[in-house]
Length: 464
Length: 79
Image 1 (tube, each protein chain N blue to C red):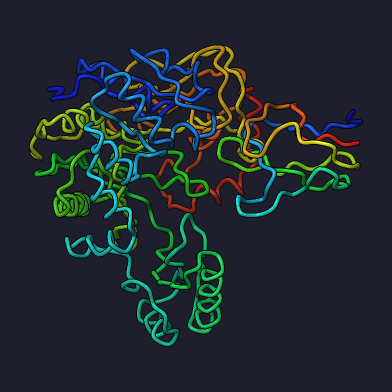
Image 2: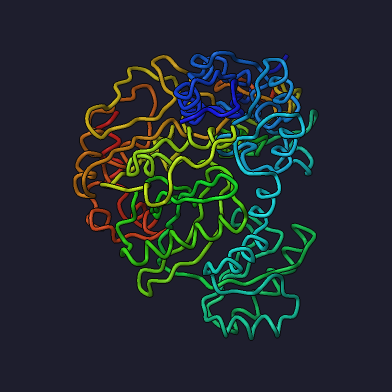
């Protein structure tokens, strides 16, 4: 793979993804600059990078989100490209524009593409135009309650009433029939008006017991290829905790249709870089619906790398440096099954309370088909200021059953002392028949946690 | 001289207000009762209310709003 025109890459992120990006850059022969806050001076990414620049205090708003501090660091070190990772500024269109305006390469799509796909209504319209199925609902905002109630009945209950100006689950109500809709919709509208200064609402069909399935794409601005699908149905508070590739729930026909729809959408927007198209999948009907597109590398990208034998982070850097896609679609093959679990600094036995402690003894799993992307070392004090992700344990095997066995083996080898992690959750989950048979949906994990508190407590006691 | 210090049980970022556009929970000179919320500490993107573990009159806030705090560090001084 070529490194293109990039000689020195600045990593505008932290944690395990910063480590991952440094590795990809080094594999390409590109020098690295790691920007960091006061709280991350001792981080593994800072230790690994060729250069490090302190860009401010611990609070993200004063460091990792400070665009001028990041651009200043790039200018001072002579970096010619910026990788935003995920979170922080990764999907900030103005940041992408500012990086390019400073004469640097942004490792990702154009600011305009980020802006387009970040606007829910515009992204939905774009998906429809590309022939991608969207969740049945209103086309944009509705003000007239009678029109809204008629449409809700047409779509079929239950429906979700969402505030147009809301986000992150705020301002959402679920109506199960017309009477409920007529009482909830005006409430939702006046609440949205008070909270966001915009009373606009829209409605969407509720897909019950749906799976979360997504497609990894990579584009060079002209052509787009996919790296098959991932299933991320295991979520807690809308956060993914366990991801697999490929989804064991899809038939070959549905998989083919799903992946082709993702490529169609990404092609329609001349997508450049790594991206993910997210869908809800209804087992019963076999229907899938576009939810949104993430215009960045995702936490769970390694499961796709494992089944396709590729390095997506290196490829997105190469594309940013001017390279064309290195493979055509028919050269991209998948084999076997991969599972990733997210190791967070949280105590599963105490309602997943975050626990930013000091890492004691550390034994990492190894051997065939095991990969551990993390930011840990013995004695490392986990800063409390950022998210709780410590690392991701990824396993690959010939099939799902073997991957589950390998995950059990790898978790058995893993030992992180000094702080509780979510590892006991996964050891308990491996005993679940539903999970072994892949009988899951996006609400399954929360229900299972409520029903099996003792399993986590036992596993937690064993691990500590 | 403070007679009691309310300490943060967890490390993170200390906030004196329930949200950026609202007034602080408490000001210097306010009286607090045991159990009153005196601030919020954000740890790893989750928010935890800090309750007074004793009553008294607030004489100071050793940590400013939106500033880093360590576990066990005093956040409110009472007289």
